[in-house]
Length: 212
Image 1: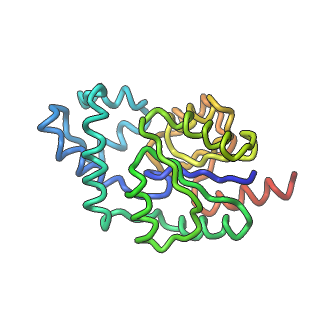
Image 2: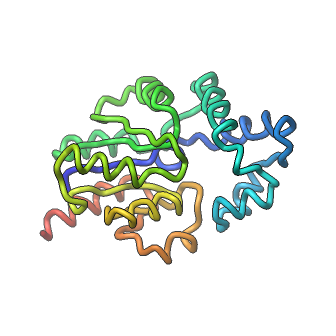
């Protein structure tokens, strides 16, 4: 593997509290139910569409609501941190010769702001999907641009929609347990790797490389 591509929110960035605040800020205007940390945990094993039904969230208004959420994110970037150990992982992967990329549906400027805020210089490229379910399209374009096959990529993420996107384009997927979705959602999509601590990302990759 050459390219290690990371999801952002829930994988690299601990942005849960900021997203909860943004969600609740716009709830009255768009007439969906507010949420709290307990609710996030309780719905961890539901798909995104099922969560939307529970909280009466209007999925058809995502293109209107999400830019407002990401703007709120940017205004409150100081309250977002990388998960403990993530910066060391990114640096170590770069030192080991991997190309580190971020692919997210969050805004590119938000990602770059947080990486700068956290002093991360090991990310070579930030890719974004304008659609929350469009990461497979971005991955396909990335592979075509770099002229590489799927097996030289690894996507590291926490959500069902991420692994579904990867499976559409045959990109191997590593699931991290500290994010949004529970493993029972992910398991049926057959992730290549499962890790429970950031440092395990490096351990798995180096072990795999030594075996190949």
